[in-house]
Figure 1 (tube, rainbow, N blue to C red):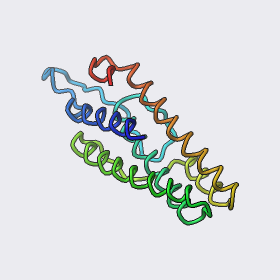
Figure 2: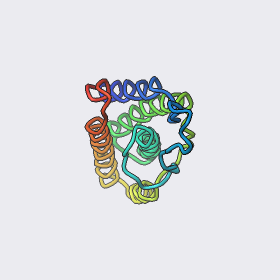
Figure 3: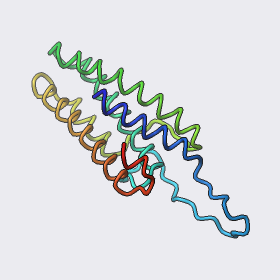
Figure 4: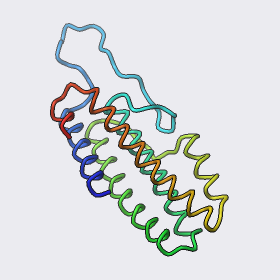
Length: 165
């Protein structure tokens, strides 16, 4: 978990260091090409570093919401402790994402996708061991998705530093 956080923060720091998305290299260029605007809350796969930043924020938001539910609904002290730890780590990650997005000029508001809202509702409707199992499976799946998105972005980028993270 800690290694994943450092990898994510390292990548996001690189994103900010690369500067804003605007292309001002050619003053004679009459039309600038811009990446499509992606609203937070849309169900999209991370295709660019900026999309990844938005998705990372959304994924932290769902982890925080699920962890809050675990703290409130679980009867298992180990699941409650896991929820507390995941919430703390994701709040730190989310704060860093927001700072980095502001520095990169990416506007971001915490939001959940329709799929994430459905997941949250379905898990919150459970209780006892069913809740604990669904919560733990959702946490694992969320982290696996984050790793896959990071790997996909790293494979697509031409920036050698990003590829070696």
